[in-house]
Image (tube, rainbow, N blue to C red):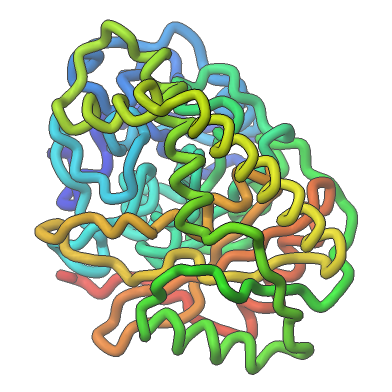
Length: 381
């Protein structure tokens, strides 16, 4: 184990950066993103000895901008799940409380950033896998619009939903990196925003408390929008698509029994059910995009529940809110919003229009100043 959180699986102690805009910045990379000469196993045990021959496009961009690529981070096997208790590489510990999940699938990325093991970490977000660890680890996470970040050098889950995104301990660092690795639009965000009603998600009372206070304290109260389908049904339709895509991509690859079971759901789905799933995803994409266009942005809890112990079963609804941005292909940003009574972090996410990434970060800065919720982990947590 390279650190007490089991976040890094490989470290290059000799890594150095250049003299360009990101000089002095250290970057850890999730194990499903290629870094030349480093392990590229995507959390899959049978690939543990696979080494990347070339840098992924986003890694190359950050390296050319002067960042030091310091190592490879732990993750969910194959990037499917939101707990990061990897059967081959072990569980990642939440820096805010040992024995608790950091979220997933980019759990090593969230933990490494929160613990100060690197300045920035790259994760991947298929239905929330950058923003969920950001929320559970009390840091900042950005999912670019699907079409605005290269997938070259990514071991995919579902390319129609995947996006590589950064995590950091402050918005300034997060934005600097996002600008270097993605197509960053400069449009402002206009409007007072919207949130969701009738979402069908069971939200933990502590998350409700934090989110209700945030909405109450905003300059203008967000409008309330509804979707045609419950978020749980939308998330399940997305999961079926991911399962089907991964089953095809990983055909013949030895994986754990747990992942193998998850990969059966998509292929065994009937044609009629798959058609219904596709219709749900298409409707959701259109409704989320229309709501953002009408109101400027959507604001939602990042995750319906606070961090939970590794000993407990992973809550199925963790991606109920985050999946909406992936399905709509829109940029989304998670920031720390508050804390449970016993000291665990809670996040809030903003979903904005494609091409208004600068506006999304400006809005996040305003909310971040209002909330003042970021705290580093306590020593010995």
